[in-house]
Amino acid sequence: MSSASPPTAPPVLPPADPKEYNRLHLDYRRPMPRPEVRGPVIDFHCHLLAARHAKVWFETAGHYGIDLFCSMTPLEEVLGLQRDWPHKLHFITVPQWQNPSLDDWLRRLEMFYNLGSRIIKFHMAPRTIATRKIRLDSPQLRPIMREAADRGMIFMSHIGDPDLWYHGKYADASQFGTRDQHYAMWENVLQQYQDRPWIGAHLGGNPENLDRLQALLDRFPNLYLDNSAARWMVREISARRDRAREFLIRNADRILFGTDQVSGDDRGFDFLASRIWAHRMLWESDYDGPSPMFDPDLPQDRQPLLRGLSLPPDVLQKIYRDNAVKLLARAGVRMGDD
View 1 (cartoon, rainbow, N blue to C red):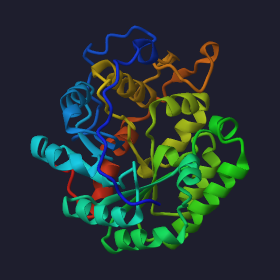
View 2: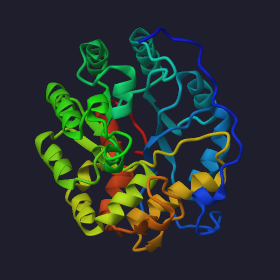
View 3: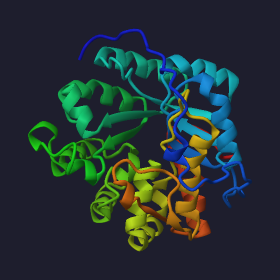
């Protein structure tokens, strides 16, 4: 891995095509009741990438009843956001993605920690492993993991990716590996750090296989899953609606709400709203119809339906808030508990 270089600002892009995020011609500014949750709603997995994106970010989230955020924000943007939006964000420790040297990552870990971060993210998707030539169980990562564990931090990881990708862009197993290999890697490291709270992003990266996820939760009592990634969750949770509903109810104490929302110069109110709208309809409602978001992993004539799970109020209370409050408290963080 090469040495660090100065951070690169996100590029200014043309406005996103509304056909990609509002296929149904919805009025996203139409009022929607807040989630029926006591206390602030916490988005545990998102990417507010720049302070200049914050105004529309918080406006959109507030419109849909999302109050607080655990964000993977570049270190260079953290102080400005802390100054202008105090008490709204908890920052997740991440490397400098453009040039993630391990020495720089260790320095950033300390700086993030000094700014209050108590969560560290390890992005180990198949393409990431293939490109950076480093795995979750690589010896080079051990100093970072030890340092984070010694500081009492919560671990988060992105393992796996959609099944459609394993049969498409990752079909060359000699280059990208197999899903079973990726999960064996994760389980080996989970075993080594089984005393640490650990969050598996995007329903552990495998919402297509609820049996795998249940086995992981049963084996590792400190493992939690977040339900982030709007298009992925809409497609795969809707496709197995009844089983997914049973799974989330059974594991209601171990699931965290997350949008995987990513800010951008080209992403205004309606784009951001489309993701939150889809999440809320998926978890809270009995909606059964087209998704407003175009899914690039499927052809135009096979776009997925959104089939709402209509989760019980006590389950939504845990997923939207209580689980996050309790988990953060284990790392000494008070967020959304007042």
